Length: 253
Ligand code: PGA
Image 1: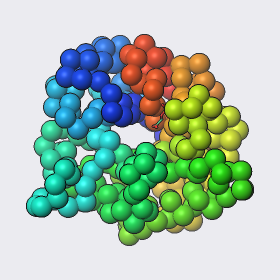
Image 2: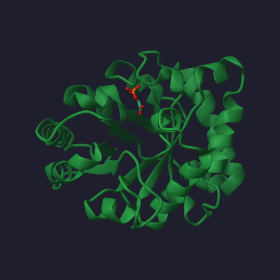
Image 3: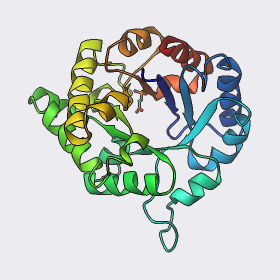
């Protein structure tokens, strides 16, 4: 049985007051489930990691980073290393979120380096994959997702692969209120699980958690996460309101 996993990606939102307050409201509202029956993570902007970490410190809520750099230190202006993220209490790191891929131009090769650096640095990567609308319309969804999964996990050994969570986020469903149907999500999740089985064997494929992301709300969360291969959700907009995010956490239990 895979434990459900709900992560809130705050993106470039909140401030030094609202961030910790939101994190505390999530921690207080989820004491019954967070860490025990569902893995819960909040993923604030880098600069608010320490106060957010403090706000959830005695709770079952974990903290993640929205991005990571693949070098440990040195002349990489503006970047944040795995060691720094560990130092401020991060457990998870998003790698290859669609906004990093499509707004900031990150390649599969860079995403792969970030996955490898996360694991080497003792963080748990959440590898994000997903097709553009034109790719879906052209019937290329599986091809795109297969490339992103295989290249994203290049050189990740079977021994290290259990550290990885994969988030399937169709780009056309992110921030658009156009959610994938539960059937569409299940179809791609089943495809990803089959790929993982080919790459790492059936046991690991059954163990790995696959999250859906893209306009997840309290109202559609239960149906999406009720699909056989959907083990949780990566939530953007709805993670900025404690009540909505808590509603999604409850739907995962
Ligand atoms: P959304 O974002 O829930 O606002 O669609 C999801 C994500 O980008 O992780």
